[in-house]
Structure formats: structure tokens, C-alpha cells
Length: 139
Image (tube, rainbow, N blue to C red; front, side, top):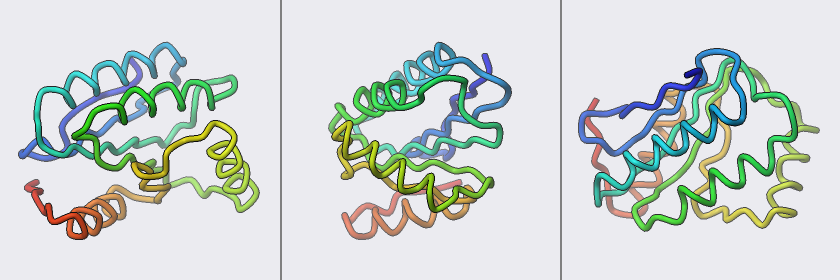
């Protein structure tokens, strides 16, 4: 499988989904299924980091991303989802992404945005947890 789905932390509060090689949308959906199994294995808040250094599979990503996001955010204990990619996202692409969020009515409550590193993602998660009163994280 070209995606690896693992717990990021010992407390099992962050799932990391890493795109390891060229992948297909079927691989993506299998990774979402695996991540969902981890998510439902606990009642604690779980945040998800999508780590991608390769790029998305070929084809229109929005229906696939929306399906995965909708599935995972249907669980009460779902926290933020954060996309991590060291590749720079242009201003134009950010506008397109935001337009697609509006078009597909993607709930921003769980959207942690795009960052360039895992450390930045952890900072976003910790700030959000602090606001909500939960700071559980051990690496």
C-alpha cells in the first residue's frame, strides 16, 4: 500500500497518514478506512495529519477528499485534519482550494489547514487543544 497509517503519539491522539509512493484514489480510500478504524478504537479526541511529499493521485481530488473528510468527521471524537506538505502551495491554488471547500460545503470546524512541516501541524493541534481545554500529547 502506498499510504502508511499510524499513531503519531503514544497516547493515540493523533493519526498520521503518510503518502509513501505514487498512489491511486483506491489506496487513499483504503487509508481512510484504516484511519477510521483507529479513530473509533478510542473515545478521546483524535486529530489527523495527512503527510504528503509526493502529491495526490491523478484525477479530480475533490470528490475523494470530500468523501474521506466527511467519513472521518462524522465521528464525535474527530478533531482537526491538517495537510502537511513541504511543497509550497501557490496563492492561486489556495484560492481554488477555498472555492472548492465552499462549493462542496466542507465543514471548516475540523479543518486545520495546510502547513509545511509536522512540527507546524503539532503546533496547530496543541493551540486548538488548549482552546478546547485538552492538551494530551506524548511523543
